[in-house]
Length: 125
Image 1 (cartoon, rainbow, N blue to C red):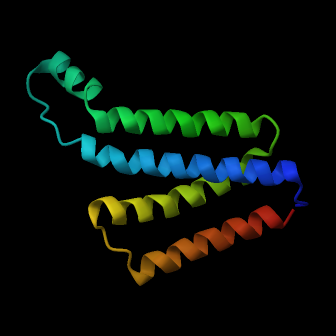
Image 2: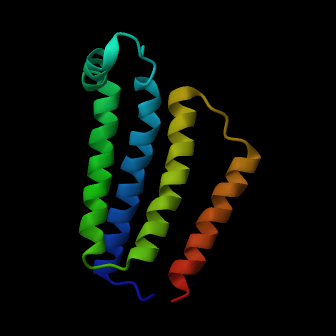
Image 3: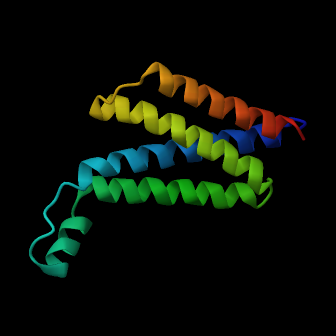
């Protein structure tokens, strides 16, 4: 893969997409602790008034819009691989920061292997 200003721009957008997807998925955990009692309308009201759920939906929509913009001009497979790799690492980091989840050596090795595999696939073109 030959890198140009355009491809580096798409790479930056793919990374941004993975980051917002990762943050959105992680912050959702803070919003799902509500009660499921009171009927469907009460539950729906709690969902649409939860700031964490709304933030998660906003982040997911932003990530999806970035993805739609990127795949208009870039290849889908490398783009998706980059986004998924960044998503995995971002989720791991955000979970550690927000919920004090442990980042173990095994998780670090897994993240490095995933990122290395994505690098090989993207650059092997």
